[in-house]
Length: 264
Image 1: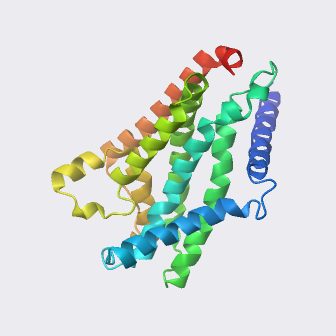
Image 2 (image 1 turned 30 degrees about the horizontal axis):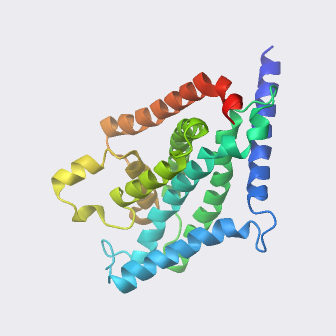
Image 3 (image 1 turned 30 degrees about the vertical axis):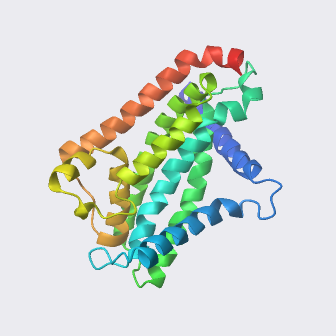
């Protein structure tokens, strides 16, 4: 009995993984550069931000660390969070023909979209490591903690995606609202600006931003070369929020799923 369950779970994981790979390939099918666009777009964005902030606004090194590397360490996790949510929000509409199939497990659609974005994230992390090596900062054992932050980001974005994908089925304006919210979160999170420039009272509020946890975690691994531990209380807050979002997302998805086929 147990063996059958394990085998079924393994088959389900393999199916979701293959579906994510197929989704990734189909997204750029027919374009001249194909899947390369998935990696070129964030890299060009990094260059543009560097040009604007360092060459335009004359941004100085942050804590004596090169601004471009500091910027990369913050933007790489953000690219995953923002892209995963945007892509997964449209998952049910993108695959509406599958939603209408009685035997297809539509639960995997937002998850597969999130997973396909994670593939790009792995490449961007390698890109970041190469940039840091060129700058003279070689990897060390603190990079291991990136696994924790990747897991956190995956769970958090999957939970958000189940909520937004459900809402988008019934409200077409959802994607526009999500885009605005993502822009707001981007500027409210210390990704392109230094957390230390804010007043202490503002800092105390900003740390409750769930995205702050993974951004700071990436910078702790890449730049500070230390284990990022915001304290037991805040760690429980971040992971508790993360799991709560996932539970609420899955709950909303399952409550509304029987109506998806009628609307799409």
